[in-house]
Image (cartoon, rainbow, N blue to C red; front, side, top):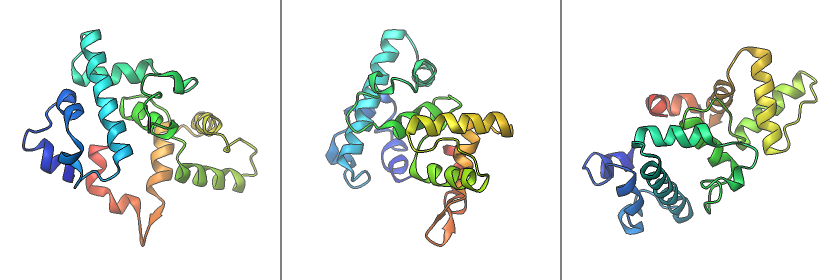
Length: 175
């Protein structure tokens, strides 16, 4: 929200190109993790160039990339090759781009493993790709979409003294 208020609302960041050209100094008070910031800039730069190459606007290029990306071989994807982008970030970006999948984040893993242990199931949760595939299988069995299972597990977990859903309630429509 601070990024939006200080850089987007004032017009400093209006598109992928301007985002990819922001300096560390312009964002250091908001985005303190330099590795993460460099990854974000590189992702914006890649998507900007892909949009120019494919003749797609910024709204469509993100969805285009996500629809054409794959979990298997994610490290070979241009975004997967970016320093600082791990499988969880890769999957999160695919989700935000409209792909019905899950991210193998530690919170999701913990909740899914707990559910499977209680059900005495031996579905795998150790490997990242195994976890995503297990969530896809749970989706088929439950009727919930993989992305719904992922967000449900993440949002019900406590962060401090409140569950994340309460903490992030005002941001949920922006995710």
